[in-house]
Image (tube, rainbow, N blue to C red; front, side):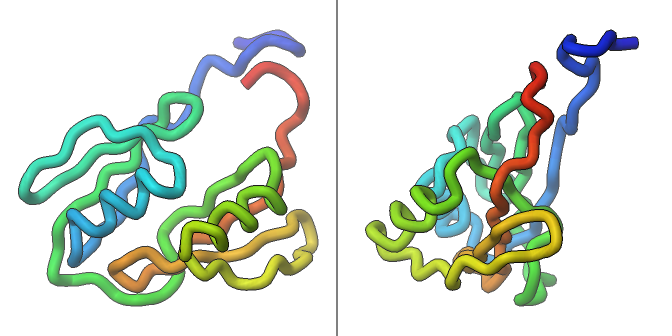
Length: 124
């Protein structure tokens, strides 16, 4: 078990998102800051901070709407400005009960929420 102040010994390994536009979604994810790992005809793998992998699965069964996950960034306002500057049309920043947040739409029509960080300040 991790002691106070130590990095937790577990983390999320994989997050899955279906897309009906695999190559476009892959390019979108690299544009927003994920690290490209590998892309095949029906699956793509990208890496987030902490080593979590986003697995994109090619599928005709995609419903537009909220993505099955949300993301956090250190500087929400700077991220919003960068996304605006590169033409991603983020929604306005809104205050929620815990976070400030905005959304951007990936090429398959799924809205990904970006939240202000609330990490503990301890190693993660």
